[in-house]
Length: 292
Image 1 (cartoon, helix red, strand yellow):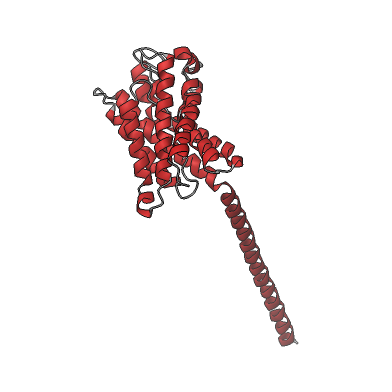
Image 2 (cartoon, rainbow, N blue to C red):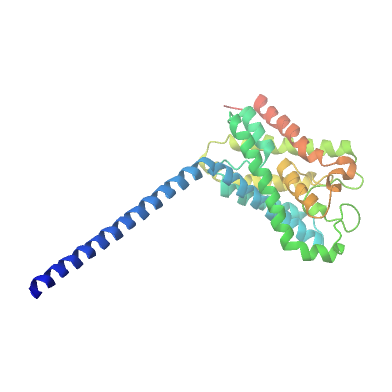
């Protein structure tokens, strides 16, 4: 009788063990299904917004690295205009390598606008790309500010200044020279933006693989040349997102609304004129040189 009872007990234990194993296996399978579900959802979501994030991160890196070289020049005793120009050219090159194969690395609302007008870029993507570029520039300014705030305090005593000897707005946004009036500033931004888009379209039209591989460096060199040769008057911006995003950040970070009202409300020039200048440059290329 005792042997029979022991056998029954063993069977019961084995049955319970099998049940536990089955439940454990079911849990594992359920976990795998959940992971696969979320992995698939993440891939789906990422594929939908991958271009947005490419523009966001590429623009962030471009503005962060470019403005960091401007900051280094401002805080340096030996100020060389070559340093920020070279820095921004290299920053543009790196940004294009990041996003070029994903979104095309527009990095610039004026570029996105002209690609819509002349290269059949989808209109529905224009607001998304523009938002990504402005947000990327804004976040770049925030990151840079955190890194250089002790240096800013040492320079201006903690009182952020838009004008004067200790002004630091130019680290983040462009500004006209002291002797540059509104008309000259508009002319400079128009010419620089037109040259940028004209040559950019020429580079984009090159179908040779070896030339296309050099596109990031060529565009970076182009930005550096424009900045060095024609940047005395205003900076220049040539990119509404590169100026407006950081300018908006500085308004919240202690510089105040003067970032928009100073120099006869200069802010509208780097925010609007690059669209006009870029359109002129792209139109000239389209009318006279476009081989498509």
